[in-house]
Each structure stands twice: as structure tokens, then as C-alpha cells.
Image 1 (cartoon, helix red, strand yellow):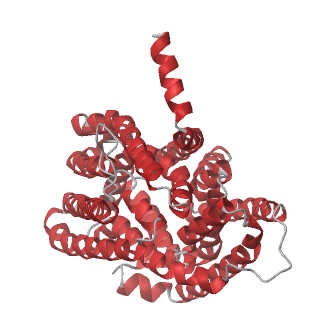
Image 2: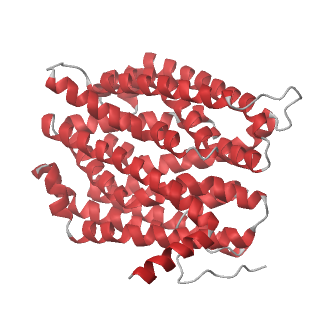
Image 3: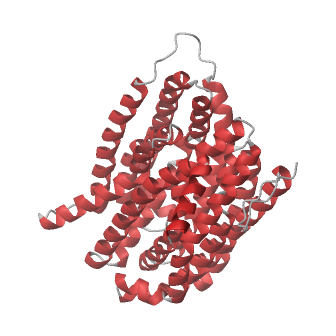
Length: 448
């Protein structure tokens, strides 16, 4: 046993890139787990205290917030991540402050405009898009949250590119979930009657202030060059456009089933579906953790033209992602009613939804970080087209299946579109670069 452990340790020490990824991934995994536990706890509290209707309204509102934040971010999240990783790899991090400040300012300005429109047109949007008046007040609050929520994405991308795992995980999502849970519990204990979305607004504001202080502190450590910045902001914008479309299409594909379900079916059914969706995505927590660290590593190895190491690290992480995901995949597929039963009897109807969504996550884990790889090695335009194709397929299937099958139809549409983009992306990367992201028992030599 001791010899096996020593060999295991020696293997990781010999693979310096994998060792670096694993160290950061463990931190990211812990942060993600704590954040997700917070999410499931507040979903449990809301579903038990308020029921599926209020949970449906809340999750639908947060979905709208996530979708509307795409355009203000303008693709800066992945573009900044890529540029920061490249500049730090070549010891040019002094060029970063001006780029980051301009990105954050542009994001805030666009988000403020969107929020302004959403706030004053909430009644029309609620009536004509959702077909129900009960979304008017939630949309107003989302309009207030939007500018601060959007800029948090820019801050998080900066820390991710700098390989500062803890602040990235915190400001990307975990801290909002943890703090919202604490405020929610506190409001119950003190018997304070406050809207869930106003509580979420307070949470985002607090996290924004903390992130801003940490962001400024991080930039102050980088001395601004007196010479003209070599990496111009216009060059950054050229990168952001395809990444904007890619992230927009990805976000829409991830959330379109919930939006369409919200328009066509009841809030209760949305609440039940979102519960199953959140549980199914637990299987991708390890994938997220690896992606947190592996993204700048992909960009760094690609910038240094180190294809052999890139192929090696891609396969190593895919194996680890699958190995750590498979236990949850099995549990969710064979014991869905037992898992959903914790949320209440009304959620047991989502058993088949959970099984279908879990199968989609299985394929996702088998293909590894293929989408992220494409965006980090200059294949973002092709990735954009693949995601667009999958999005069109997703929306079409949702419109056909949801009126007939409801939440199960949404789950089928989500599963098919997820499998489609993973399969096409994996085949494309293999044919054009020789790099295989699909899980194998040994690293495949590059097709030079």
C-alpha cells in the first residue's frame, strides 16, 4: 500500500503541469462544493418555507439576470483570462491594469443601460415575453442588480488568469451563494419579512464591494508601464467578439429550457425542474474545478507552442474528471426519487428529469474540457458556430417538446444539445490539432 502511494505521489511530481493543476483544483473544488452546498441549502429552505411557486419565481429571475449579464460582459471573461495568462507567461503583466480598468468600465456602462431599460420596461417585458404580470417586480430588482453582477465577472476573470484560485472561486459565484444563505437564515431567525430578490440584491452589493477592494489591491501590485501599452485595448476587443458570441450562446443554451418552460408552463413546474437541474449539475463540479485552473494552463502551453504537454494535460484531466464524477452519476441515475425526496414530495415528479439530465452530464465528463480548450487555443470562432448550432437545436426541441412533455421535454432538449456540441467539438479538435479530449486509457500521440 505504501509503495502504491509513493508511486502515486512520484507520478504527480514528475508531471509538473498536472501537479499545479491539481493543487489549484483542490482549492477550487472545496470552494465550489461549499458554494453549491449553500445553493442547495437555500433551495431547500425556499422550497420548504415558500413552496415550488416562490422557488420558480426566484430561479426564473436569477436565470434572467445571468442571461442579461452576457452582453455587458462582452466576452471579457474569457478574453481577459486568455490575455492575462499569455502576458504573465511572457512576463508582461505590467500591461494589465489599463486593459482591466477599461474592460470593467465598459461592462458596467453597458449593464447600467440594460438595467435602466429593464427597470422602466419591466411591466411590458413581464406581459409580452413571460405572459404574466407577476414578473414585473422581480424584473425591476434584476435591473438594479445587473451592473454590479456583470462587473463581478470581469474581476473574477482577472484573478483566474493570474492563477489566484481563492478570489476567483469566491467572486465567481461561491461568495454570493454563501452570503445569500447566511442573510436568508438571519432574516428567518430575526423574523424580518423581506423579498428574496431584495435579499439577493443586498448580497451582490456586498460581494461587489469586497471584490472591488481586492481587485484594486491586486492591480496595485502591478506597476503600470510609462511606455505605450503594447497589448492594446482594441486588440483585446477583437478577441472578445467571438468569445462574446460563444459565451452568449452557451449561456442561452444552458438557460433556454428554464426560460421557455417558464413561459409555457407553471411556476411550480419550473421550480421542480430547476431542483433536478441543480442536482444533475453536481456531477460537473469537478469539471468546473479543473476548468478554473486548466484554462490559463491551456493558454500558457499554447502560447509556448508546447503541444505534447498540452495533449498530455488534456488527457490526464479528462480521466480525473470522469473518475471523480462517475459515483454521483450512478447515484443520480439509480436513486433519483431518494435524492429528490429530500426537497419534498412535490419534487418527486422530477425523477425522470434528473435521470435524463444526468446522462447528458455523463457525456460531458467523457469529453473533458473541450469547449474551454477551443477558446484558449484560438478556435473560438469555430466553437462559436458549434454552440450556435446546438443552441438552435436546443430552442427548437424545447419549443416542440415542452408543450407536450413539460419538464421532461426540457430535459430531453437539454441532454441532446449538450451531447451534440460535445461530440462535434471533440471530433473537430481531434481532426484539426491532433489533440484528443475524449477519455482514453493512455495519452494519444499527436497527429503532426
